[in-house]
Length: 65
Ligand SMILES: [Zn+2]
Image 1 (tube, rainbow, N blue to C red):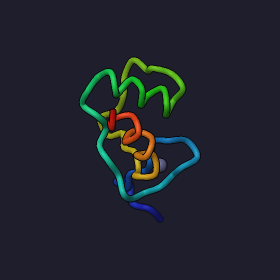
Image 2: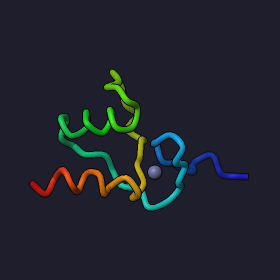
Image 3: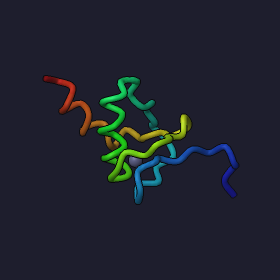
Image 4: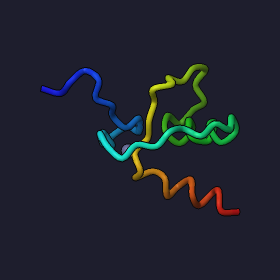
């Protein structure tokens, strides 16, 4: 049985429970993330939302310019 505090990657169909990264502080980058994760820009996003390292190849490509 998993503890209640266990985090899980926010990306659907991923479900990874380790190697998390925090969300970007830049609102514009954050929007891109929300579109990437949810296919939309939600009004409210949980502060506890985390992404695993699997998805960070996507951002590093964007940030190298
Ligand atoms: Zn993930």
